[in-house]
Image (cartoon, rainbow, N blue to C red; front, side):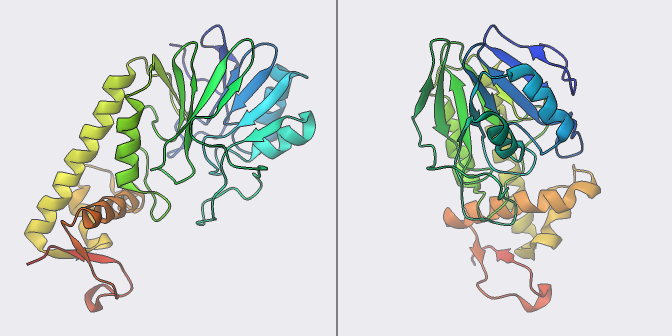
Length: 286
């Protein structure tokens, strides 16, 4: 596949082009991938941040042919440009809005939320909406059925694992959504960050395996400690991750522990524990 280069329009397939936003960083990799689908009636998937240079670059590509602006989810690196593009072109906004959890883009609005299984059709392509909660509750992937290319947003990214942020993010939902994607005819994954992933089933299974290994490590540490706060457990569960990323890793640890609580494996104290101040803490049943 092509290299991921911000500001350059890259032809990925006959129907799909990619334009990368200039918001690269630790959490966004090379930048947010904006995908342009079609030639005559265009759809944009994940227009990215409200960045003038990136929006102008998108407008230079789409001209007066933009019909839909789709977002996989409403996080600030994926959706803020959507309202600007809609205002400038008259394109329809497609996606799902959820209750603000402190991480949502409030500028994105829709007449109604997209539903699982809905299709957007033109003479060139069919875009199938697949609800994939986990990273966040309102996350959708979109499948170009004619090519099997799946736009994965932050459900799957290239080069790293995604962060699951409770309570709107849910590890059990995330793993179930990954398993569900195996039921579709997918030829490649087009992630929200990083390059195209040409072996989708291998990539999906690799993420599932990684998460289950991490869950096993969570249990191993709890078996040793019997109880602990998120702050106390993170350095042990994520000893293989740079310390600078531990605040982010702590969020995924929280998601793992909440999944294990749902599974009946660990317990969570309903009130703050004296030893950990106001922190959430977990323990194994006796």
